[in-house]
Image (cartoon, rainbow, N blue to C red; front, side, top):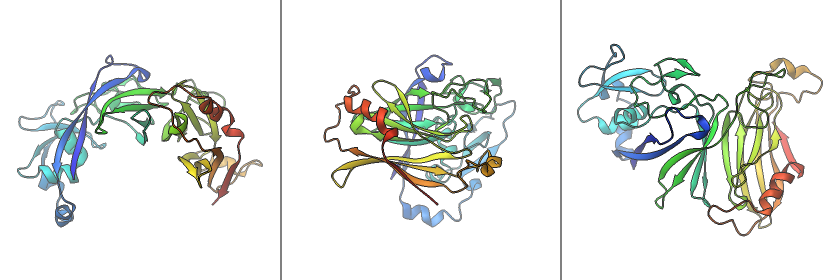
Length: 335
């Protein structure tokens, strides 16, 4: 198949606040290949077969070399070896994408979901910082993350993260990206929260509910004491908590299963590693739930036959879902 990488052109101010970010997207082809041909050489091809590499001098590459900063490897100066473009694009994809001018500055890009009603993609950026800033890391000056890049993305940092929306054309190509919703940083409170409690923190997984024009957002965060799963109403922009986890765990696997058995729909959710990533000392407290994770669902919801039209406003059904989902039956099994 043919592989593409994305070149982002920021259309909002530089720098812009995370919640104000907008950009256009151009797709650059990295050539077509066949799996069988790649299998023949994957075990024997080394980085040195694909590129010549030298260190930058004063943040500058020598003539004939191209600056690249991708995959957490820092600023490199690379020269593609003759006839190696196709293999480099498959075996060193991030480096090659930067080499041909695509954007390599995004930080902690996580889950993605498709919205067939509004013809959009929604995707989570758990933390807006480093390469997404302009020669900074969390507001402190450094060139480590932008040296060797085009510095395409220039946003003020937000460690609480954002969910982005991408518009799709008739061929399902993403043409623009803009911010949909962000968390908001705050001073650490007595419970250790560093993001506003009524807003998202470190969004990780997202899932679309097209029948209600709503988005499920799941957190994987240390900025909320308890990680939360939210319903975001696309029309009203309202956030509603539907689920939270014990200390030290994260929400995973949110998904909408419509029309199960022709009668009802359900939301799945998972609690991963309670008391695992933090608060390990609290597992012995009287109200602790233990180290076991949980797999379960929220529902049932009555099946909706017709989905709202493109760009539809929130319906009565969508508002009801936001308000009553937390009161419906919830079944979770530990493991």
